[in-house]
Length: 406
Ligand SMILES: Cc1cc2nc3c(=O)[nH]c(=O)nc-3n(C[C@H](O)[C@H](O)[C@H](O)COP(=O)(O)OP(=O)(O)OC[C@H]3O[C@@H](n4cnc5c(N)ncnc54)[C@H](O)[C@@H]3O)c2cc1C
Picture 1 (cartoon, rainbow, N blue to C red):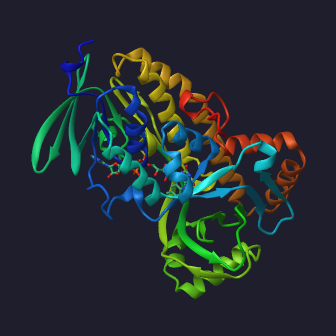
Picture 2 (cartoon, helix red, strand yellow):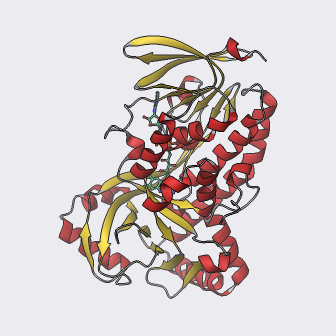
């Protein structure tokens, strides 16, 4: 195939965590990449790199390692050595431990901003990347052997010709809308109040997932002895809760979480995110593939959204590395087939957790407690739960295979 017939091989729309990760992952493939991002890089207003934190699974750590980025991330994140799962008001609890899984950590807590800095630093040194930023996609035309994308940049329109277009443009994806690809939305009626707190006692690298009658509450260990808090509450209560003064907010949080980490002392800015499961009805259309939040937006209860997207990226990179034509239909079919099972598993796992554990029904509460005790007692079940949380269920793409040095 004559590569000079197109401006690039892979055109990525959206330079958030997922789009930027894909651009970095594709660097060694030799493909010419173009990335379109609506916001100026490194700007405070860049929505993907805000105050939020993400729990990266062990599998995602291996993928970042395969991309050559982990060495720059490692010192700026906190390890999760134990996951403690409990149900408020019930006896049951279970613990997943890194030692039982034979890994250095079950996962890591990273600030989105830190990941953004590392990714953009890497993109600056990408030899075959053409960056269009700030720029927006305004039109897409699909041809048999390429895609024509019209973008606006500096008030001017340009057309970019690519073999493959990857839509990583977030939950309200313009690309999805332009191609009239539908999505199914399941609104959980919950919102997450996100903040950081400093507890009185050290977190000892334990992540706490506590299920309460109003929704799940997670405390994740962060650097500088802080914890990242993801508190899911009924949507109608979220804004009022987030707007409480610091002292009252901490009192209510303490009452929900208990005293496992001593007295909660300091709290940061609060943000509210509505929690929904949004699934695109089609992941591939012609020479367009949809990834990240544009393809699936998942309740953060089990910390799976970015982790799932990184596994998508790892496989896409593997398939593209061996390809002459990046938008080849067989390649994209193989991508869909190979990613189907993992995606389904994550949907079911997360959706099940939300529905079972966000219910105040008393008999269900006892069943939940029994379930947690069972998982706590039966090593095989615990191991399966840990493998799912670590992003290690199913086939692992080449880039995410465990590096020899860990
Ligand atoms: C409260 C909360 C907690 C979470 N916790 C976890 C966790 O612990 N673990 C985990 O794995 N995941 C977690 N997630 C999920 C994770 O944050 C997302 O999966 C991830 O941020 C998705 O990134 P993205 O790049 O797909 O989308 P986005 O971050 O939305 O990025 C999209 C990008 O596209 C750009 N863009 C949009 N439209 C256009 C256009 N027309 N032209 C050009 N560019 C455009 C935007 O400017 C943006 O930069 C959490 C999510 C939430 C809400």
